[in-house]
Image (cartoon, rainbow, N blue to C red):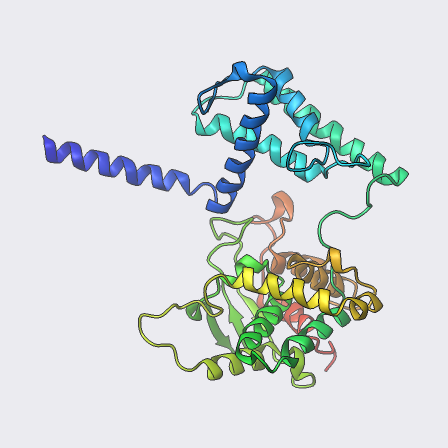
Length: 355
């Protein structure tokens, strides 16, 4: 009986681990941080709903509404409103709404229809409030990071190659930058590329992801074709990868299979921030804002550049490469084909479309 009970407990734990996979670990940590913030707010404003370190569920709908109103305003670490008064984006507030639902789900409790209706109504109303503030000029018209232009991408690629003091480190950054642009992928996805994710098909290097942030089951992770640009070696992803691999040397058995190594996203982000600060004047001259540039700027930038190219690839091909949803028709009527993705890949590489 003892062995059977131990085996049952082991299987139950394995089942719990599988269930946890419904959320990315980073997303789970993000929600847990928000829940901790919610608990501190309850302890200060509605302590009756917290016993020890546990939030007592269910919560009254007015408490949830008060909290969303609280987090809609930007504050310092002590919880004081910033002056002049500024508001968070709709996506930020929506994140806190999702964290409340996450709290219920982790406690194996259903959100009441009243609380669910209040959360949805607040979210919908706040979106309109944000739109009004953007219209009257009290909130920036742009949200998130701005797309980087093609000229900005070329400038940063040149800067990554120009450093001679830590050349090996910058070769890694340069290749990461070119892959982010050409694959139209998030920095986290680029950082997860392994050697066995890369293959060749004709004149194209093919990269295949197992999953992406918005596709955790890998249903729409179609192969992405990456092309060389012999006319501009500075932005040639194939050449950059070749230099990186041959400079690093052959991979020894037992070492990491990650192309860019561990913590690649964080290292690339740190380089980007430092480079933008050092070359602030030149970046501003390119029509870009240093504060609005981030790792996501390349994904936005290449999609913007390609979709605005006269005679460029179809919009659906760009969306499929980026992994964006096409609604209910995707998976039923529209699928990625090699021709469409190759067209997008050539444009992303900076190759003139009629060459």
